Amino acid sequence: MPEVTKVPPVWTTGWTDILNTGTWRSATPGHQNRLSPCQTACPVGAEIAVWVKQAKEGQYQEAWLTLAANNPFPAVTGRVCHHPCEGSCNRGEYDAAVTINALEQFIADLALQEGWSLPAPADKRDMRVAVIGGGPAGLSCAYQLRMAGAEVTVFEAQPELGGVLRYGIPAYRLSKEIVAGEIKRLLAAGIKVQTNVKVDAQKLAELQKEYSAVCIAIGAPKAKLPPPFSGNEPGVLNGLQFLLDVNRAQVPELGQHVLVIGGGSVAMDVARTARRLGKEVQVMSLEDRQSMPAQEEEVLEAFEEGIVLLDGAMVQEKVKENNRFKLTCVKVTLDATAPAGVFKPIVQPGTEFNLVADTVIVAAGQDPELADFSASLPVNNNLLTVDANQNTGQAGIFACGDVASNERFVSMAIGAGKRAARRIEAFCLGRQPGDGAAAETEPVAYKEINTFYFPMTPRKEKEVLNPELRQQDFREVKLAFAASDAQTQAERCFSCGHCIQCDNCFYYCPDMAIIKDAMSEPSYSILDQYCKGCGLCVEECPRGVIVLKEVKR
Figure 1 (tube, rainbow, N blue to C red):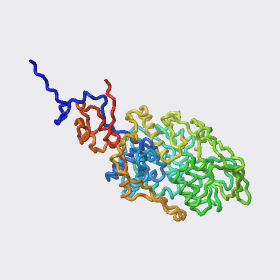
Figure 2: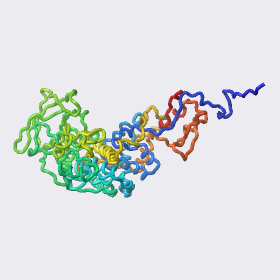
Figure 3: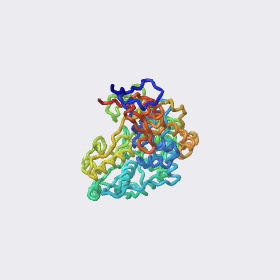
Figure 4: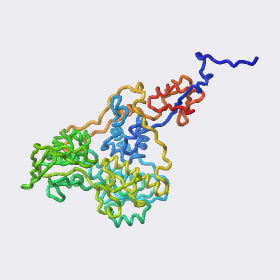
């Protein structure tokens, strides 16, 4: 009689390694490094979960290096970024978003204080690139190309680099010492610079012959003038030019009563700058209060400083008497059927009101100066036309930042410069853009986070100076985090999609189907013969790192 193989009982107090439960499964788990939602929302594609984890562990220099790999200006964006990352933070659905922007400033300021240096560029490669414009987009592009081993020269029309960072953002929001420090460190990587050089059509043609590629990043300095105002009119100033003049200590004559027209961040900067110069300031915007493009915190701080907002309104007529404007204004709503970026105000009858102003400063949007390029490059809606690869359609000429986009945020410009650099690198080396790029997974959703493992901890905001102090001078308004605050906020991060080797999957697996090897990457592997696809490891993973996938039979 043949020997009968003993079948173990279903219920046993012995080890489960005698049960090949892997034959039961219809799904199998796998560890993945996944995108965090904050990273997908970040304009520069920063690996936020990674550098916050490094900060949490006290590895501040490593955190800064991770930051700087995607953004050469973290001390700048730590102050002026509109931080869409925080709006996408999964923690926001639990108690409150992590204060990512303040953490970025803390780490980046520490880097400046300690004099940390950027890594050495890659070995020299056959790439010579000219970047026209030394603002955030141009310098970001130049930096990424230099790190990739290119020889890069930046051509800047102004006496100093920085663009809007140096000349357009007031010191109360962004200290010029911070800008200078980050640019100095950037140039130490070996980027060449020629200042006081305005590139026209002839110069562009010369650069095309001399360089492998050219990137145009000249920004958008030309003010849009809504009716009834016109250019070169006495008493009517360009908002960006006004900020530039103040930054150069060349304050124009304003009188006592100033009207600022516009509803974005530039309008708020202009208004708050004029207020610091001792003026009575009103801001008029076509948008209503809830629709203004300025950040909420900017508008609230402007209110605290005594600035009056006239939202949902426009100037209909103006009369100049005794060097003062007498303005007839009216309340409006915006036509919701108008195309994106087009404003069609609808006058509300019977809502007329009058204003008197010594100076009107227009900050209702800007356009690039394209007269030198429009004859040879495609232009549409006052922007250089580019494809998905930042290419203008003329071989070897690329464009990025405000000259090619209406997304007028500093971090957007930095991100556009980074993308342009990747495309230019591919062009110079004869590759298709995106060659060698890793496939991206879907970002981790809040429902995939096991919040049991995270105690509720309050979010901390940056402290803001008292309004009375703010109006006295141009000192920075927002105060940086102390080290203890930075540590507490870093610890609030879920580290979405990034394994921190908490061992939950290892300990909770009922079939001992997960083995751990701290020396490998990833640190855990699944034993197929034992895993029955129960999904307990997925449920107990605090960070959404483990994904259960259906087995194909």
